[in-house]
Length: 309
Length: 295
Image 1 (cartoon, rainbow over the protein chains, first blue to last red):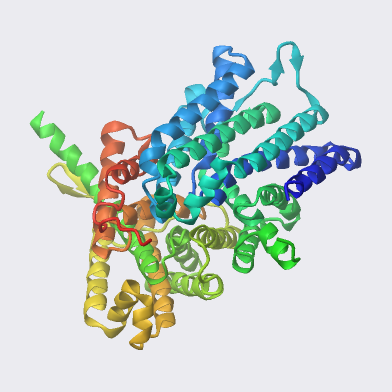
Image 2: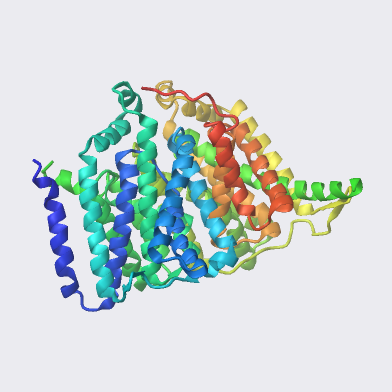
């Protein structure tokens, strides 16, 4: 059924096209943009966690690399935004490639520990190098300008980010149905079995880790430009956990689940803002509740319930 | 020169083994729960925070010190049991990632509740037996450090006795080796889970109470302390009790030495750099078994 693979993509495209005309004000448009940015990061992370079965509890570190490469290189060194963005992505990619071999020899909780450690080290560096990064207070980031065109206003940002998401969705859908995607799913199922049939396990793990790191870094740069300010919070442990939670709540190994997870978890703090002080408790309780009753995540659980597939 | 470096070195060593002892207690908590249920409990750090914060609260409420301390150990143990009964047991057989998120959810709930009822302030209470420093070979040691080390040693000895001499302790060990086999010989494995979570909560709380006069406490200290306890448990090779104690002390000492000789700004990063280096060369920690895969 090659046609149905893209049905969801078309639905999302239609929703994205109509949405800005339905949203009452820029507050909601801003929320939508942040949802879309998170959806892109989560998509990349889901390829790693859901499809390849390798957990990363330090992914916010890579988002932080992108965000701070953009902030520091454009502000202190006068680089153009595009060059800074690419430098960040290159840095994140090289770091991921360097640590991938030793890290992916680890499994389960040891892998969780190593990725967590990596993320925390990056966030501590960002917090400590105050001369460059502004330390815990963060630093401003100039607007995103390409050639003579400067991106400004929620409307323009919305269309750009929507475009990025649709493109990444399309690429991910193709990727998981390619030989590469099949190899990933095979090594999730059983590493030994996939090795036996000739899958170079280490190579594929490295490739998907680098890919998701580069993606996280690029979206970190985009966030930095959009918000106009970066703080060390983008790189910290809690943000890593948020990202993993989006993956798991939406549904591991579910492309559309990534989008749903990102949308829900970005909206949740807004929805809980009325609870005055109880936000953290409610957030934690919802996480526990979802994971206890829907350990496979929303989209796969609902898909199973309503029959198809 | 010779007379210079020794006092400084001793000073770093003292502060290292003091925090190291608290990390060791936290690491033992991680180990207990990991052995009983194969779960890494990311709420372990919150037990440490609860210990300190609850003692502060009960002291402010006018309770005498011994009673405040007892309650501050008892309540986290109860919280541990609640986590096991309400969150871990219903989610049995879930994937590692799912279980990790459940315990993180529990940590957020605990932290949130403490923040609401006890506030965001930083607190402390007086050291157990004064704060007159004891001079040793040019370095100084606070009496509270002796409390930390003494109580931690006592707890470790008691645990050693519990696991090697009592039926329940042996039942827990048996369950951690092979749950199904333990069930088959008549061990009540759900009681084992219950006791492991309670003990783990109490261990964390004890560490938190002992450390508070030295390092202060607030609703958010649990994250870092918990993560470092996790590092210590992994250094010792998850699942080994002796490894957890050695790992805790090692993490504490290396952190203190690194902060003293290399950079105090990067103090918190040192345990994580250390664990990455160890895992790169020894994928199962210093005391972990050989890596074997079941296909």
